[in-house]
Length: 153
Image (cartoon, rainbow, N blue to C red; front, side, top):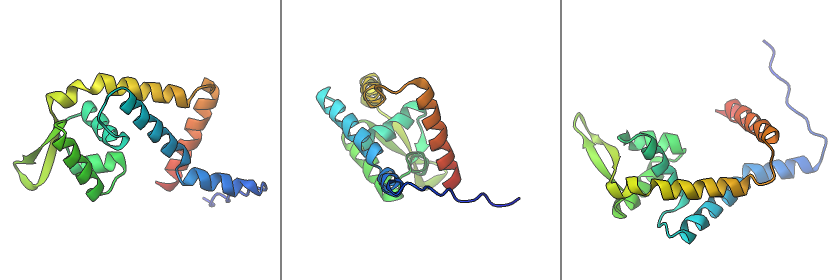
């Protein structure tokens, strides 16, 4: 099967706009807004920490490596995030009985109880970010980003 040709874009501004996209301008802006919404609602959690908590709310007992993979973070970053969340009393590490080098991560009652407030702020942030975008445009963008992700995965 022949290789697909590279897409050639004639617009000279295309590269600049795409590089802005690659630098994470949109995701950074969303994370900053989420952080601001957390702070304004009295939640003592960062957007990075929320991403870890989100996966634990879905399924407790994940390993640090699982969390690193799910959140696209390296081992030192996920370890730092988990340590800070543990210090805040939101989660706890439990050493695996069959592999002492591995930890499973579990929520505390405090960590479980903050889910509704955090999710409300996440939904508010998404609503703010998607204001004025119709469902058709959103579906197209989602398909485009999924294709970009699969191409480089």
